Amino acid sequence: MTSRFEELTHLVYEASLDNSLWPELISELVEEVHRARDSRYLESPNQMEAETRGFENLSRHFRRAFSISERVVGLQEREAYLSSILNSFAFGVALLNEEGQVLMANSAMHEVLPTPVSMGGEVQVFLPKSGEERGLSRCAEEVNRTGKALEFQSQKDGAADIIILPREDAARIGFPSIAASVVMSSGQQSHMGADHLAKQHGLTRREAEVLRHMGQSYDLREAARRMGISYESVRTYLKRVYGKTNTNSRSEVAALLAQSPLVAVRSQDVPASALFQVRNRITLSDGRQHEYFVLGPQDGAPVLVFDALSGVTIDVIGYPQRCYDMLAKNGVRLICPCRPGSFWSDPSEMSSLRDFASDVRELLDHFGIAKAGVLSVSFGSGSALAVTHELQDRISKVVLSSASYPFYRHENWRELDQFYHMSCILGRHWPSMLRQIIPFLVRSILQNKERYFDRYCRRSRSADDIRILSCPVIRRRTAEMLALRTASGMEGMVEENLLNAQGWDFDPSDIRTPVEIFQGPDDNVAPVQGAELLQQHLHNATLTILEGKGHYHHIENWPWLAARAAGKDIGQDALRYDIPEF
Image 1 (tube, one colour):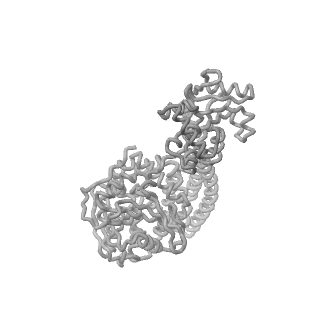
Image 2: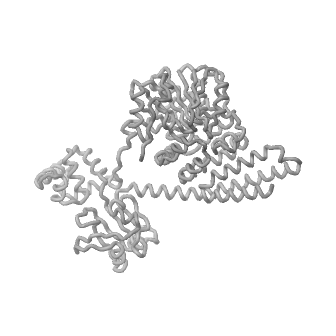
Image 3: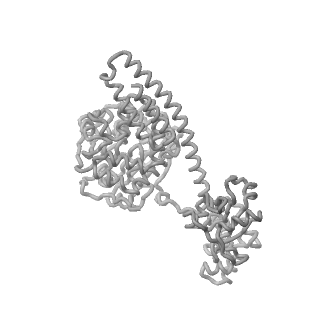
């Protein structure tokens, strides 16, 4: 017995240093909890006392290991935050070592000195004063030998101003001492400051274009060439810029541009989801902000979506145009309420899954919707049925895909996925441990998504699940959506997991709304037997077995599932969603 706890303790500390080991640790913990509950292993009072003492010691080690892991993960996340900040700047920064090789470079510098920087090879630059082409490492050697900064361009016809600073100058500014020299660039593509100035002073499209070229330090003849107009036309536009901005020279315009903090920010494409106005918020009656996603034709039949706890099956944020096209064909409008504490919805203390019903009622009132259908996926079935239980006058039909039912106990839990282990074993018998583990499991997925999906695919008996979860787009977008879902913290996800794990505090048989359940026989996250039990406990439910499917079939089947939730009689051979290839 002692050796088992010693092995677990070692694994606890290993996981605190290697975040990718949390899934293995969860499996071992579940195994131990299950062993402790089996009376065959507790044949004497001494064994029971030793078992209790072992769990107490393990809990103490867990607290220490969590503290270590939090510090390690905190440093990793801090590095990621700093990288994100550096990459948002329009000006380029690169640190060089003693040999003139790049130690790190932000995105703007990669754009100025592209491939060689990312490959770690030699970078050739052009010195306009001497007309010489030279390697960056040689430039670094010269500035540190002479102690004088050196200006250059990325190529002969390049317009980006680049400077390399010697160690002394870099250290004086505050760069780390590891940098033997520092390369800085004014950047090539930040038009945000010029665009802001153009809007402020009512510049025309051509006048704003001249202003942007000036911000890139082009002379007037080069600006004319790039704009495809005559030199005299550029001069005319420039005079108009002077008049509208109340300036008299290029230096005064440059000074005006420099006053805007937006000149330091890289130009970014507007997300497609923003063009579709997918993400929205309302203020609830208690003052909380509630976020929801909405997509589909204005006259489409409304369907509320309660997704799984770890992501959004219907990727209305990443691929709104694709999703809209599918929704328009079926005449459906999706509304996805974000549960408290997830995405940008303010957190709220919840003692029951039913507590979310009041938020959903206010959202329906906001849209003026008398009745809506409901589509839920995986562990979202708890929230979906809890809301339906409370709002039966507002819900017309419920469709559950890969439904999870916490009152079902699988006869061989070891063959199932770790999410079942967490919810039905740890969450039920050791909830304090589940509360601590979830944040680290989420971080493990975010930082090691390939390992997480590969692990699931090795355990899955569904060829369909393996095919879907082997798709690079699904892996990338699941991690990105999980990061968005937990951007404001993980407390909302933790609380909902715990409420699901402890069992529903409402009676499904009270629900009179028609319910359809669609389940794959090879589902190893929410077993089909659990769906069968749930069907028996519901008052008005049907169960359809999707042959050859596992847990994640809804990623392709959601168009016709949503249509059925809207009350449309659409079969399984209807329109399916094609997963993007890149």
